[in-house]
Image (tube, rainbow, N blue to C red; front, side):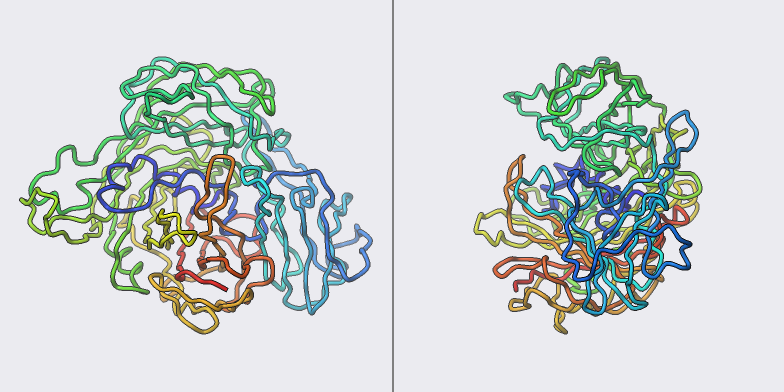
Length: 583
């Protein structure tokens, strides 16, 4: 299943004007799906190193068994995956999950139990794990975009004897090659384009290779990448670093000789209200941006080569669109987002139509954008007729509104049109390194489901934020901070007041800058703990003395702790946040 968190965050692109008006964070580019944030330890979206994973096992390495599951003394995790390629029958293929991790072991009752891949049974086996609550601890290889940084650590706290983490159903073909070479690129040349607008974006997408890359044009005339400029009607030799999101390991390489499709989508944007006047200047929706997949180009290219720039060509063709009415009760989202602090200072909502792979339920794969509307809270003039910089202002959150959502879908045979509604609260914090660049913390409410179903009734939040969020028993509101928490603080909370979560994910994020191959990274996830419990102690390997962190607690309804995928397209998510913590 592609993550609703990351899918919705992809849609915050065409927002430059609104960001300035609302004082909100810049758009968030694609983040890996397959629940990399919301399913600790289950993601396959990592770069495989091919090295044998290490373990600190204190017990003898168990001997693999191929006996019946009910006779196995320990924990097992089936590793057979079903792939759904374009124009072909389903393919079942087993893969050793240990190839995707640098470390993997179960810790229970003070002992460590190593993972062994039983090839004949196509499953992981953790022999000897007692029938008690345990921690499945995994660490991904270091990401190639952050040289020298350790990979994310993910912990699953469970008592289940059979885990569904490493099975599942995947979009595309099973034998996709991938790379971690940061020099890999595509040089795109496409004609017959609609004139490029100032807020337009592009998406490179392949269902069969399971790759999606959101691209923002560089409108600086001195840009050396070949990016199209304003009003351009073609793309001429635009070189783009190939670092797509995927449900697979590494950055997938598109190979049309093996049947891969490859598309360039042009997401054309324009203001929701062309020229706000009078009282409209006090309404955030007057400064919202809407976008639609207006045209696509089916691309031709030779097989991609790691470390090289592949020439890609095509011609845009218009996409027929339709309008869908969405009754968004934004006020109900805003009311829940302010439970930890009544003073909302920065908020935003994204209403996005995407194509989710899978018919009966979501499957692991990327979700191209079909259309959407983005709105942020507004510092509005108290007097709408005041036009000077000295006008007294008030912060206004988005209110209820019936939206005409324009949707363009040239991929209808590939999946299910899905609506994602996400409303977020942002809290800005100073750079702890003294760099003068403000960063932000975020909490969210997300509703995801079939587009045709959610259009039938008002869209309201379905799952509230966890309550009473505390660190070592001390509540840390988003606008506050707490020092001296130690490197193993205890995180506690109570369930949301509405909705019934299947599981919780405690994500640990740092706001300390780190240098990546594309420049400084201001905020990143160090990993997560997925559990059914409402109190956990953060294990070693996450927090370090002198660091600056915050915690997000995600509640999710739609997929249980050990399920391989959700049982329907109806997925509800909430994420609460603490303020900044220092050990």
